[in-house]
Image (tube, rainbow, N blue to C red; front, side):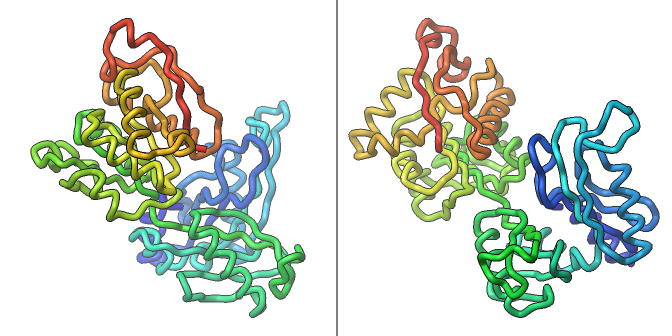
Length: 374
């Protein structure tokens, strides 16, 4: 949805009628997650995608039908057969898509909230209820047809919004928690998660670029004003000239935040890691050679960091992809962040290291035990 919000706003401003198709549930290896949205305008223009191309043609027809009738449609697509022209997912997954006239789904106010990064959740009745509910903190707009249901869904939506979660909830017709007469889809638009990059080096510039590409709000922090400049970091949302640990003490870190410590200098990275490993951050990674890594662990233990906290540290940072350039290293770091955030197991050790971190020395070939965030 975020990738099409500007287009939707333009259609709304022009008075263009449209329908939206949103992935509400998936099973197995479906290509897109719940919340992925495709919009079809009355003139045939299309924004976004719900399956990476597998069922877009069929969804286009459903959206056109929804525009003509004004009625929503809930459709499930499974595996296609051997016919090359059959409708279905070749990946073996199953996807459920909800199609509805767009203005009732994403109001101009919701589009503005999403564009500005303000937290908002939208809930639609899929079965057993109809209508739309918009939740912004304590403010609730719209209705799903029952006051009790509205209260229960709003409560669920606030919890999901706090965690950036999107999905289907089942409740009773009046909001009873243990019943499943009603199926409601809650799409939450939390502010972008944060990526904190400590160390204004050339590798950090590449990490900032890929962080923005992945949808993070990127902050680059370094105590040295000479290096932390807008010219060197044009992609960062925020540039902070301050000692990293001081900045971390005063900023907000939640369970969606990722922290990349690229200073590989004990006077910078030990104090900031001492604090980072005690936050709720989803990921904490640090750059450095084997010697730097071992010395860092010793210093952190001396500073009172416990073994359980050290288990959260991903060091050397990033998956071992054989990368050497800043851009390749940024891809390796991003890959590890995605894996950890998705709960995908990552290798527990390395057999080689990257040039920036240790160079082509015998030491570089020695394996280092690596633990990652749970």
